[in-house]
Length: 273
Image (cartoon, rainbow, N blue to C red; front, side):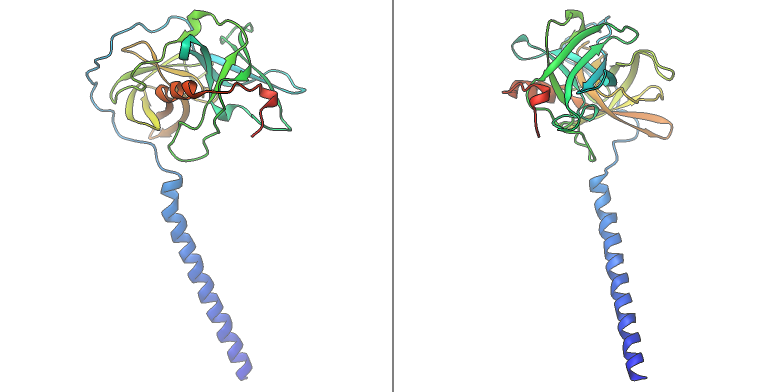
């Protein structure tokens, strides 16, 4: 009888310890979640700011392009969106998101990336080399500057399709901007989508869009300032909150800095992580 009582006491103590550890784990996870999965900025945009930068015209050409990827043994497949910008020393550089491509993988070997204007099957540019080392897909957090791939076109690119980076590097809170949707006209969205900047810092820009739309495959599309007519960043992520869409973009200043730091231009099929 004494042995049975001792066993029950042991079991009860073990259960109490297990529940205590589980409670501590739940608390730890609850405390960590806001750091791992922080919420993008919310609320209303600030008033339209005074912008000292020179005024410019938005491009008439469809500078947001479809991005098509081909892997070894496969065909071209629509992977996302992208654009071209004028980089260091006048180089023309392609830009898209890292999460739209599989790079450095020995099973899925990237062979080429091509760009097309929505509604037209003609290839406007082909790329088989990186412009510097590629970034990595964003998994969580609000740092959007790690998610990027810069590309070196194999030939000339129509100058009308090449955007100029905004010298400010990013827009100002309250500024009006335009997303040049690389997919062109879709069921839920037009080719030009406007919004107002909610918040800006060194790791990302957040924009409250004027209308709700399905943003799938728009990652990599350029966002331009309505004031300067120049590109201020690359679309990367979107959050729908309260019936409104908040767009997160990689600031253009960060992309230009990465282009300036590029020292190697590896071929897609030779690059390994």
